[in-house]
Each structure stands twice: as C-alpha cells, then as structure tokens.
Image (tube, rainbow, N blue to C red; front, side, top):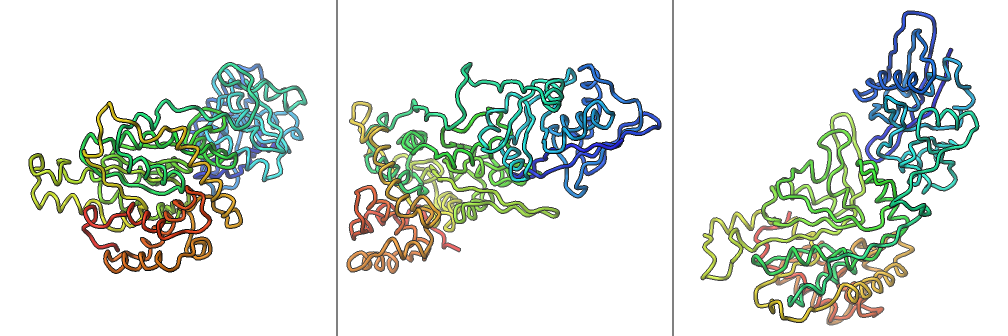
Length: 512
C-alpha cells in the first residue's frame, strides 16, 4: 500500500519541499530510505519505529520502502521524522491518505513519540504557504514562530499521538508560551540596553561619529591606543539603533532559526556579532560546509564588530569586500552555489601599531618593519569601503569625572529622526538608509554644487580618492544633512564628511 506525506528540508536559507513516498508490502521485514538522505535522516528509521510502538500504534512487520522526492535534492536533518512516521501509519492503514494531502509535517521524534523542535521553522512555514499547503503540523515550541506567516493554519503537536489526532480532524495542542505568559504573536517590544552612551567620558568627536554611523547605516573604523574607549563605544552602538521593522524582524528570525537558534519567537533587537580575531574566512562569510552560515549573514540588519582588526588574517579581511559592497554573500562550491543576505554595519577597532602607542616616542617601540606589516593588514581595498575612519587619542579623554558627550536616549532620538527622513526620501528606491544608495540614487538625492563640489574635487586631487571613496563621502554628507534636518547637502556637510574620512595614517597601500 502506498502513501505520501509532505515535508521540507533546509537548503541554505531556503526550504525545499520533499514528498515522502512510503510503500508497505509483503516481504521480509526491512525499512529502507532512498533519495539522497544524510546520516541524520537514515537514522530516523530507528527513531520512527520505536516512537510508533511507544505511542500505541502498530509498526508493520513487512517490507517498507521510503522514497524522498525529488531524488536530486539532498535531505538533511531530523525534521523529516514526523512525516516519515505519519507516512508509515497511512501506508499501513492506521491513518487515511487524504489526511496527509494538504498538510505538511515537520519535527524530530523522540523515542517516546515526543515531537521536538527543529531549526528553520519560519522558512518552512513561509515555503508551506507558498506551496499552497493549508496546514503545518510541528512541535509546540515552534508554533508561535510559524504563526508569524499569515494565511497558514498552524497545528502544534506535543507527541506523535497529538499529530495523528490533528490529522484525523481533532484539536491541536497549544503552542508553547514564552516567559510563562501567553503573549500574542508579533514584534516584541525593544529591550532597553544596559549599556548607555552616557557611560563614555570625553571623546566627543568619536561619539558624534558613532551617531552619524547609526543614522546612515555607515561602516566605521575606530583607531587609537589601548584604553581610549574604542570597544566601549562599539558595544554601545546597539543602544542608539532604531528597532527592527516587522519585515526586518522576520528576515532576522528566519536566518537565526535556520542557524539553530531555537528561541521560537520573533527577533526583537538587531543582531550584534563580535567574532574573535582568530576566525577563518569560511567562519566569517560561511561555506565551511554545505549548510554553514557565516558571521556576516548572522549580522544581517545589525552590527558586525571586529575588535583588534589588524589581528585578523589577511584572507579573512579580504573576504569582507563583497558583502561590504553588495550587502550579500555569494558562495560557490564545486556542486552548489548559494547567495545569502548580509546587509550589516561594520564597526571595527584597531591600534595604530602593534604595541598600540604609535606617535608616542616614549611608549612606542615598534620598528619600521613592524609598522609596515601592521599597515599592510589594513589594506586599501578594505579601508576604501569604510565610510568613517575616526582617530582617537588620550587627549580626548577627560577621566571618570568628565561629562558625557551624549546619552543613548538623546542619540537614539536623533538617529530615528534621521532614519525617518531617509525612509520617506528613499521609499520608492527600495532601500532604507543612505549607506545603501548607489550612484544613480546619489545623483538624484545628493546634488552638490559650488563650494561643495570644489571641496570634493580638491580632496580627490590631494588624497587620490577613488570614485568609491567619493561616493561614500557623499553618502555621509547626506546623513549629516539628515541629522540637521536639511533637505539639501551643503558645503559644510561635505566638509564634515571629509573630516570623518581622513586619508593617510591608517592607509599605506594602494586600493585595488
């Protein structure tokens, strides 16, 4: 007897539909699974057989053949367990075939029949809706996450018995609650960060640069000796960023769900990723194995903080060029190609030399060779993609008794007002921040003339600014105008943008 069940497998950040075809016929008792199944799927034979028996159903002692179609798509993960079990029950006459027709099943089975949550629920719920399936049966812990997709009936099931009850027309179990409360599905309130910009004393120019970076979504490099507050500033950036929109929250939730974050709720804050400088290029952008997701993708719609930038391997920093320029990562391997979203803000911190005290003859003991090696790590192509380059020094510190330049609350109001101006101006362009504008958008929304154009031309001639550097300067100038509430970009805005992008000192190599 033949039966079919619907499920999905995760391929990168996407869900691919899988049809589970189960054939039960007379013959020696065997349980074979074909269709490019990985080890976790092949091991499902033991989980499914034991779960069926422990839930009071009969496991057929006949020849069982399972085909996972399409046969050229690799099937990974234990999320196919529930569909396999229900397919076996339907093929053995314990469940009607019609019950599985317009339904998808997704979940891992415990030996006692418990339905366990699996990563990628939101992606699977979206794919289920797109494929025209009316109902999704899954673990209770991921019910609320799946309910974020409108137009889809979500049926949480605590056990295999519950799933069979739902398929027979019975009621579903209640989805698991978060924090002990039956909270409604939707965008959670933005948590108040304990880290406040008011904790920073002095360094007013660096604080202002951080506000500009947050307002326009710009990349920023903080350079200075140890102890001036580079890391402290970067850690407080999330406290002044605007909350995620619902669309952004769903994007972030989908990525982290696929990556294995089993919180089971909509993301409520922007990601802040801070990998150690020993990370490899594959760890940073992904591609170490078929389903690996790199830090730049996990930082999508948030912040990627690279502390001690000069300590990262050259190949690792070179891998950042494409995502910084395009907002995506394209990974191509021998048998597959995948494109992941990677629209993030890069905040980096570095010392000016290996010992950290370049310019101070009393403290710096680095030789010319060491300084040259240090500068080569901070290569031109990477620095050319960083909008703001801020020099910090001990003279900007006022000690613990100094007054803060701003608080997170005040800075966040400025940032949100500037972001709203950008949203209104760029809504027809399909982008949300000045940092995402291309050459055409710059020509339309950042028209400069007179003194402003002369300043940019003088900077190009004196500093050898590339076309990319000039465009990034204009984006920052547009953000400065938005912070001050001006419709037009003035010469003062261009001058301010050039001051936040100094040339020389940090860069000693020609851009390529």
